[in-house]
Amino acid sequence: MDLRVEGLSHRYGDTVVLDDVTLDIPAGRIVCIVGPSGCGKSTLLRLIGGLERPEAGAVHQIGAPRATSLNPLTFVFQDFALLPWRSAAGNVSLVLEDHGGIDRDGIVADVLERTRLSEFRDALPRQLSGGMKQRVAIARALAVSPEVMLMDEPLSALDAQTRELLMDDLIDLWHRERFTAVYVTHNLAEAVRLGHRVVVLSRRPGRIREVVEIDTPLAERGAMEDVQRHLWDLMRDEARAADAELIDA
View 1 (cartoon, rainbow, N blue to C red):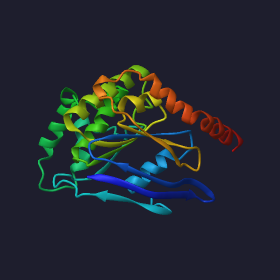
View 2 (view 1 turned 180 degrees about the vertical axis):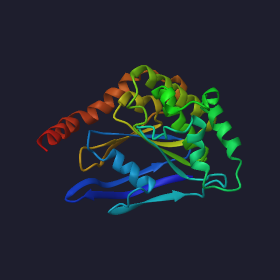
View 3 (view 1 turned 30 degrees about the horizontal axis):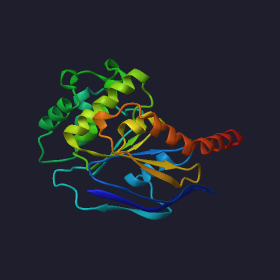
Protein backbone atom coordinates (compact mmCIF):
# COMPACT_ATOMS: atom_id res chain seq x y z
CA MET A 1 0.00 0.00 0.00
CA ASP A 2 1.37 3.41 -1.02
CA LEU A 3 0.45 6.74 0.54
CA ARG A 4 -0.09 9.99 -1.32
CA VAL A 5 0.03 13.22 0.69
CA GLU A 6 -1.68 15.89 -1.38
CA GLY A 7 -1.81 19.61 -0.66
CA LEU A 8 -1.69 19.36 3.14
CA SER A 9 -1.98 22.68 4.96
CA HIS A 10 -2.54 23.20 8.67
CA ARG A 11 -2.59 25.96 11.26
CA TYR A 12 -2.86 26.32 15.00
CA GLY A 13 -4.83 29.49 15.68
CA ASP A 14 -3.25 32.22 13.58
CA THR A 15 0.00 30.30 13.05
CA VAL A 16 0.32 28.50 9.72
CA VAL A 17 2.42 25.39 10.39
CA LEU A 18 2.30 23.56 7.04
CA ASP A 19 1.53 24.95 3.60
CA ASP A 20 0.59 22.86 0.56
CA VAL A 21 2.74 19.78 1.26
CA THR A 22 2.54 17.09 -1.42
CA LEU A 23 4.64 13.92 -1.40
CA ASP A 24 4.54 10.22 -2.20
CA ILE A 25 5.36 7.45 0.25
CA PRO A 26 6.00 4.27 -1.78
CA ALA A 27 5.58 0.84 -0.27
CA GLY A 28 8.75 -0.79 1.02
CA ARG A 29 10.69 2.48 1.39
CA ILE A 30 11.76 4.65 4.31
CA VAL A 31 10.91 8.31 3.75
CA CYS A 32 12.72 10.64 6.15
CA ILE A 33 11.40 14.12 6.98
CA VAL A 34 13.94 16.75 8.05
CA GLY A 35 13.82 20.51 8.55
CA PRO A 36 14.43 23.32 11.03
CA SER A 37 12.92 23.30 14.51
CA GLY A 38 9.25 24.21 14.47
CA CYS A 39 8.79 23.56 10.75
CA GLY A 40 5.91 21.12 11.25
CA LYS A 41 7.65 17.74 10.91
CA SER A 42 5.74 16.08 13.75
CA THR A 43 2.52 17.83 12.74
CA LEU A 44 2.88 16.35 9.26
CA LEU A 45 3.33 12.89 10.78
CA ARG A 46 0.20 13.30 12.94
CA LEU A 47 -1.80 14.41 9.92
CA ILE A 48 -0.60 11.40 7.91
CA GLY A 49 -1.54 9.10 10.79
CA GLY A 50 -4.98 10.62 11.30
CA LEU A 51 -4.32 11.98 14.81
CA GLU A 52 -5.31 15.41 13.51
CA ARG A 53 -7.42 16.57 10.60
CA PRO A 54 -5.73 18.93 8.12
CA GLU A 55 -7.16 22.34 7.41
CA ALA A 56 -6.73 21.60 3.69
CA GLY A 57 -5.55 18.69 1.59
CA ALA A 58 -5.79 14.95 2.13
CA VAL A 59 -3.84 11.73 2.66
CA HIS A 60 -4.76 8.98 0.21
CA GLN A 61 -4.14 5.27 0.66
CA ILE A 62 -3.33 3.74 -2.72
CA GLY A 63 -4.12 0.06 -2.74
CA ALA A 64 -5.78 -2.02 -0.05
CA PRO A 65 -4.01 -3.05 3.16
CA ARG A 66 -3.10 -6.69 3.48
CA ALA A 67 -5.77 -8.85 5.09
CA THR A 68 -3.31 -9.61 7.89
CA SER A 69 -2.82 -5.94 8.76
CA LEU A 70 -4.60 -5.19 12.05
CA ASN A 71 -3.69 -1.50 11.95
CA PRO A 72 -2.43 -0.09 8.63
CA LEU A 73 -0.84 3.05 10.16
CA THR A 74 1.09 2.62 13.42
CA PHE A 75 3.18 5.09 15.43
CA VAL A 76 6.57 4.68 17.10
CA PHE A 77 7.26 7.61 19.45
CA GLN A 78 10.38 9.17 20.94
CA ASP A 79 9.41 8.41 24.55
CA PHE A 80 8.78 4.64 24.11
CA ALA A 81 5.30 4.93 25.76
CA LEU A 82 5.64 1.63 27.64
CA LEU A 83 3.45 0.68 30.61
CA PRO A 84 5.90 0.32 33.53
CA TRP A 85 3.96 -2.49 35.22
CA ARG A 86 3.90 -4.68 32.11
CA SER A 87 6.72 -6.87 30.86
CA ALA A 88 8.17 -6.49 27.38
CA ALA A 89 5.80 -9.20 26.16
CA GLY A 90 2.91 -7.58 28.00
CA ASN A 91 3.56 -4.22 26.39
CA VAL A 92 3.64 -5.82 22.95
CA SER A 93 0.44 -7.82 23.56
CA LEU A 94 -1.41 -4.64 24.62
CA VAL A 95 -2.09 -3.66 21.01
CA LEU A 96 -3.58 -7.09 20.26
CA GLU A 97 -6.09 -7.28 23.08
CA ASP A 98 -8.98 -5.72 21.14
CA HIS A 99 -8.53 -8.13 18.23
CA GLY A 100 -10.27 -11.48 18.31
CA GLY A 101 -9.51 -14.61 16.36
CA ILE A 102 -5.75 -14.19 16.37
CA ASP A 103 -2.90 -16.12 17.95
CA ARG A 104 -1.74 -13.41 20.37
CA ASP A 105 0.96 -15.52 22.00
CA GLY A 106 2.31 -16.57 18.63
CA ILE A 107 2.40 -12.99 17.30
CA VAL A 108 4.13 -11.70 20.44
CA ALA A 109 6.74 -14.47 20.30
CA ASP A 110 7.32 -13.79 16.60
CA VAL A 111 7.87 -10.03 16.87
CA LEU A 112 10.06 -10.41 19.96
CA GLU A 113 12.24 -12.81 18.00
CA ARG A 114 12.35 -10.48 14.99
CA THR A 115 13.51 -7.61 17.20
CA ARG A 116 15.97 -9.80 19.17
CA LEU A 117 14.02 -9.50 22.41
CA SER A 118 12.99 -13.11 23.08
CA GLU A 119 15.25 -13.52 26.11
CA PHE A 120 13.89 -10.27 27.59
CA ARG A 121 10.19 -11.08 27.21
CA ASP A 122 9.59 -11.07 30.99
CA ALA A 123 11.66 -7.99 31.79
CA LEU A 124 9.94 -4.83 33.04
CA PRO A 125 10.75 -1.49 31.36
CA ARG A 126 12.78 -0.33 34.38
CA GLN A 127 15.08 -3.30 33.81
CA LEU A 128 15.76 -2.37 30.18
CA SER A 129 18.15 0.13 28.64
CA GLY A 130 16.81 2.95 26.49
CA GLY A 131 17.70 1.07 23.33
CA MET A 132 15.93 -2.06 24.51
CA LYS A 133 12.83 -0.04 25.43
CA GLN A 134 12.71 1.36 21.92
CA ARG A 135 13.06 -2.16 20.51
CA VAL A 136 9.98 -3.11 22.55
CA ALA A 137 8.14 -0.11 21.06
CA ILE A 138 9.14 -1.23 17.55
CA ALA A 139 8.08 -4.82 18.32
CA ARG A 140 4.72 -3.50 19.52
CA ALA A 141 4.29 -1.60 16.25
CA LEU A 142 5.18 -4.68 14.21
CA ALA A 143 2.68 -6.81 16.15
CA VAL A 144 -0.26 -5.26 14.28
CA SER A 145 1.41 -5.94 10.92
CA PRO A 146 1.26 -2.30 9.79
CA GLU A 147 1.42 -1.13 6.21
CA VAL A 148 3.27 2.03 7.28
CA MET A 149 5.20 2.80 10.47
CA LEU A 150 5.09 6.48 11.44
CA MET A 151 8.25 7.12 13.46
CA ASP A 152 8.56 10.42 15.35
CA GLU A 153 12.24 10.97 16.26
CA PRO A 154 12.44 7.43 17.66
CA LEU A 155 16.18 7.58 18.43
CA SER A 156 16.53 11.16 19.67
CA ALA A 157 16.34 10.24 23.38
CA LEU A 158 19.22 7.76 23.08
CA ASP A 159 22.96 8.23 23.39
CA ALA A 160 25.12 8.17 20.25
CA GLN A 161 26.31 4.57 20.65
CA THR A 162 22.78 3.26 21.23
CA ARG A 163 21.51 5.23 18.23
CA GLU A 164 24.12 3.52 16.05
CA LEU A 165 23.04 0.08 17.30
CA LEU A 166 19.36 0.83 16.74
CA MET A 167 20.04 2.10 13.23
CA ASP A 168 21.86 -1.17 12.51
CA ASP A 169 18.84 -3.04 13.89
CA LEU A 170 16.40 -1.05 11.74
CA ILE A 171 18.49 -1.68 8.62
CA ASP A 172 18.66 -5.42 9.38
CA LEU A 173 14.92 -5.45 10.00
CA TRP A 174 14.22 -3.61 6.74
CA HIS A 175 16.26 -6.12 4.77
CA ARG A 176 14.17 -8.92 6.28
CA GLU A 177 10.76 -7.19 6.24
CA ARG A 178 10.92 -4.45 3.54
CA PHE A 179 8.66 -2.34 5.76
CA THR A 180 7.40 1.14 4.85
CA ALA A 181 8.12 4.05 7.18
CA VAL A 182 7.77 7.80 7.46
CA TYR A 183 10.64 8.77 9.74
CA VAL A 184 10.82 12.24 11.30
CA THR A 185 14.25 13.26 12.57
CA HIS A 186 16.34 16.37 13.24
CA ASN A 187 19.50 14.28 12.76
CA LEU A 188 20.82 14.45 9.21
CA ALA A 189 23.14 11.47 9.75
CA GLU A 190 20.11 9.33 10.64
CA ALA A 191 18.21 10.55 7.59
CA VAL A 192 21.10 9.74 5.26
CA ARG A 193 21.74 6.36 6.90
CA LEU A 194 18.12 5.19 6.85
CA GLY A 195 16.21 7.10 4.20
CA HIS A 196 15.59 5.99 0.65
CA ARG A 197 14.04 9.43 0.18
CA VAL A 198 14.73 12.52 2.32
CA VAL A 199 12.13 15.31 2.32
CA VAL A 200 13.53 18.70 3.36
CA LEU A 201 10.98 21.14 4.82
CA SER A 202 11.44 24.89 5.01
CA ARG A 203 11.00 26.83 8.24
CA ARG A 204 7.45 27.57 9.32
CA PRO A 205 5.18 27.42 7.47
CA GLY A 206 6.66 24.11 6.37
CA ARG A 207 6.87 23.69 2.62
CA ILE A 208 8.88 21.11 0.71
CA ARG A 209 12.20 22.64 -0.39
CA GLU A 210 13.59 19.51 -2.00
CA VAL A 211 13.18 15.75 -2.09
CA VAL A 212 16.55 13.99 -2.13
CA GLU A 213 16.62 10.44 -3.47
CA ILE A 214 19.39 8.18 -2.12
CA ASP A 215 19.99 5.15 -4.32
CA THR A 216 22.92 3.64 -2.41
CA PRO A 217 21.76 0.37 -0.74
CA LEU A 218 21.24 0.75 3.01
CA ALA A 219 23.84 -1.88 3.83
CA GLU A 220 26.52 -0.05 1.82
CA ARG A 221 26.14 3.41 3.30
CA GLY A 222 28.79 5.12 5.35
CA ALA A 223 28.63 8.69 6.57
CA MET A 224 27.84 9.92 3.01
CA GLU A 225 29.15 13.33 4.00
CA ASP A 226 28.41 14.85 0.58
CA VAL A 227 24.69 14.12 0.98
CA GLN A 228 24.66 15.37 4.57
CA ARG A 229 26.42 18.54 3.43
CA HIS A 230 23.83 19.07 0.68
CA LEU A 231 20.97 18.64 3.16
CA TRP A 232 22.58 21.07 5.60
CA ASP A 233 23.16 23.61 2.80
CA LEU A 234 19.42 23.43 2.11
CA MET A 235 18.59 23.92 5.78
CA ARG A 236 21.27 26.26 7.19
CA ASP A 237 19.67 29.65 6.57
CA GLU A 238 16.21 28.29 7.36
CA ALA A 239 17.47 26.84 10.64
CA ARG A 240 19.05 30.16 11.65
CA ALA A 241 15.85 32.03 10.89
CA ALA A 242 13.74 29.45 12.73
CA ASP A 243 16.03 29.67 15.76
CA ALA A 244 15.65 33.46 15.81
CA GLU A 245 11.87 33.11 15.62
CA LEU A 246 11.84 30.72 18.58
CA ILE A 247 14.01 33.09 20.61
CA ASP A 248 11.79 36.09 19.77
CA ALA A 249 8.73 34.10 20.77
